[in-house]
Length: 206
Image (cartoon, rainbow, N blue to C red):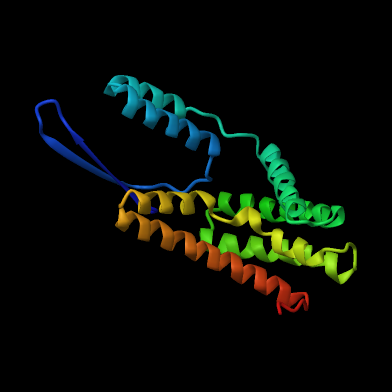
């Protein structure tokens, strides 16, 4: 679940045990997510014992966080590439790069200060959309609408959405509704920030 984890195990003597704990607030690390995914498949396919799984999990817990400046640059490049993928011109891609860099930097700062993630999404979407509106206000390129639309794509909660659909396919419907609701709330916050930015800059949505 978005706010807690329930873990069920059965001991060698057949006695079931259930553990439940709350989840901490932290940035999503795709490196850690992929490594945990590999461990889970190894446990399921190769029948790892508890000791081996615990050692593997401990190695994941000791993973050092990636350099924040490298992540900032990489995310900005990726979102600029998304703009080009959606037929944005080179100027629009450059504007999206700058808008993403400013918005994502703000996200890093707010998360460090433990600001509510919903406020973070709305604030970052607002900043990025305001900066992206410069493409249209100053007639910098030929695809300003694409620049504005793609400037907030870095905030789309991809992992929660994927996990929700995975739960739905596996018929874990309670987890599906929980994760999907959490993801939709973040998408609504993103949309509010985007619309507020466009309204503040006098850019019509229709």
